[in-house]
Length: 56
Image 1 (cartoon, one colour):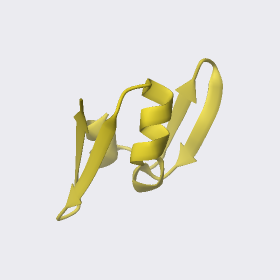
Image 2 (cartoon, rainbow, N blue to C red):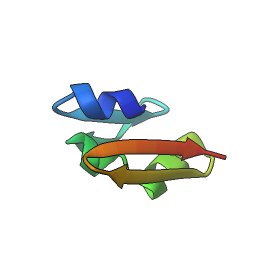
Image 3 (cartoon, rainbow, N blue to C red):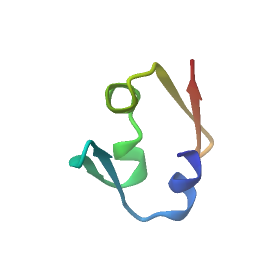
Image 4 (cartoon, rainbow, N blue to C red):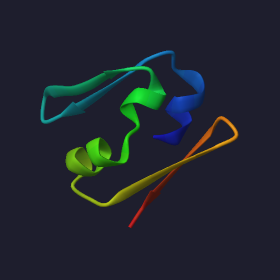
C-alpha cells in the first residue's frame, strides 16, 4: 500500500467490488478508512512527505 503513495497521482480503494474511496493518495490513505476496508487496525504516519503504514 505505501508504495502507491509515491507513484500514483490518484488511487482507488475497493471493498468487495464497491469503490470506497478515490482520490489523491494522502486523501485515501486514512487510518479509519483503511481499517474499515481491511478489517484490521491500521496506523498511518506521515513524516517529511513520506507515508508509513503499520498493521497490527
